[in-house]
Length: 132
Length: 132
DNA sequence: GATAATACCTAGGAAATTTATAGGGATTAA
DNA sequence: TTAATCCCTATAAATTTCCTAGGTATTATC
Image (cartoon, rainbow over all chains, first blue to last red; front, side, top):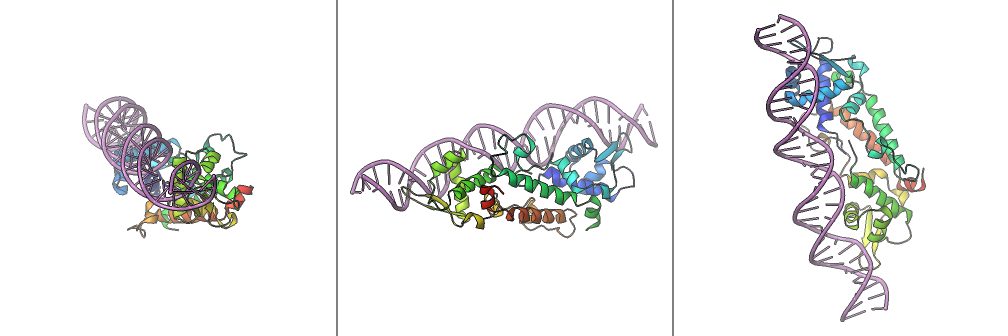
């Protein structure tokens, strides 16, 4: 049960945006430099975050990416659910599971799913960047 | 972030063993039948669980697999850590991470790791089989 | 002692997923 | 007009997952 690179790297990119919150848009090359990621790869991560309205961007020269809300209003849970396309640890939590009622293990997954989300929703991007 | 089939199916097999706890050993073909898994595949899951001393087996005719402890003494956490080879959600939790101190996200992973284990260690195999 | 039922071990391959790389298009400030 | 930027999509390499397969060792039962 591993978090994907997308999740890990995307969160780092969000930290970078948080560090410079209020300073205007950050360009892709700049964020790539700071996070040590290739521009082309980072671009895809940012496009996911943008689709989910966690960040926005301005195009053209001197454009770039920026957070749509302040770092204290964005939780790590939101970010990872966006990047990981949901935090459901088993498929039966996403789709419709036929035998919810009879399955012995279904309860475990729902319980764990709730705990994971609760934990991550309790951490804001601000806390992350400022260190505790 | 998905649990592997190994984890899901192995837990089902453990449930089967728990259901018949005290009735002697269950044969591989029997467990395979009940869990709807191929014998050869199930065999590998059981070998992992055996290596970690959650189950044991007797060989030869009328042999089979059985739990080493009663279902109430075995937690779902133990079972999944065995099958998943640990529940570390990122690699830096397993190996030695060089920049623990400077990494913004390291704290998130340790916190989440603790919560996941706490949650799963709080559920016994007995609860699972008896339904709450 | 032979037989059949069982667990044990290891190799490997198909399929899926992850992790990127690459190229070109659209937009816009200067 | 130009250069800097974001946007979109295809695809390739690497890794991992998931499972099949074949053969070996052990032992209760007849």
